Image 1 (tube, rainbow, N blue to C red):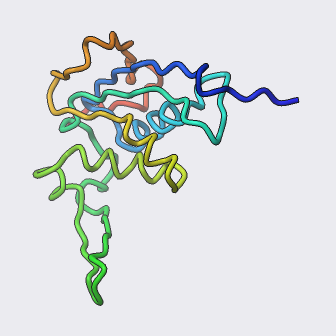
Image 2: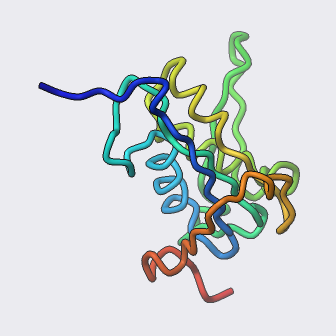
Image 3: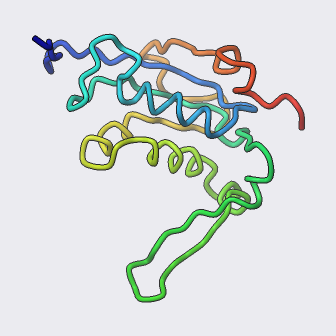
Length: 153
């Protein structure tokens, strides 16, 4: 018999990640696993038992290859012929946290549960964040794998 975690048993931790020189795709994959709760042994697919993730230095993330200038983000206004195209270079100037949010959002399953899980992602420019009272645990993302950080440039 499978044991499912109950809502009263869910304990949400706070994790802080410094995104300086981190590769966007690898960082988004790691964050999506934590938001869903797949890193816990009591993972339940239909429950929100993931942790809160605080990402600092969002404006210092890096892309590999030519993705920073060549990758395209599409969105539609809802009107006929209303397709809008942008790339990370222009998006980085106005909203650098939107790049990571889009990457994480597309790695979560679609639906109401994913919207709730995505709301647990907090992103900030610079090192400062208002979540010190939650006593978050610091994860050194660059030391998890050598490919997680770009050391050049």
